[in-house]
View 1 (cartoon, rainbow, N blue to C red):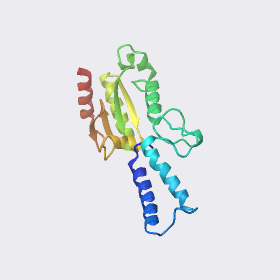
View 2: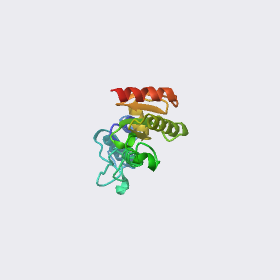
View 3: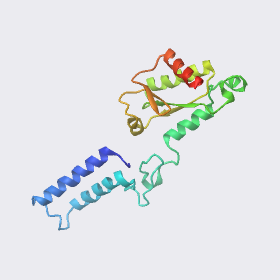
Length: 193
């Protein structure tokens, strides 16, 4: 929740409207009043956008991605970490076990270049992942594809439309599935560097 501008603005507006109502004698906050519940909830949400302290849990537990975990319900691994683990377990050459045993192909090395595919799980995003993996397999270039589906993480890259491709933390494509030639060009540049 830390840094969430939408929550910060909404809670600020609630606190501002209650404060103005008190100033203009619409409500008296000096008396015991049900509005204190709204003040408390808004204040907790507002502070959470700055400090990251989770107001929905007595312990204030947050996941690694900064999400509130009511009663500790969040798992200890984030969505991005789960995607990275799944990609590394699948290997760089997909599920073909005979290809994994070949010493000359990309599966000899698991330390491939990280390529992030930003998208919320749409078919185009999934197809972009498959296309990049397919071209990498053809070129025998080790890649580690990380699928990022968290909307706030996608927004942190400034991406307005998905799928988007990120290499070395730089957005190099967004808004459509890249062409096979374009992916091959990116991978050739990565292999030569």
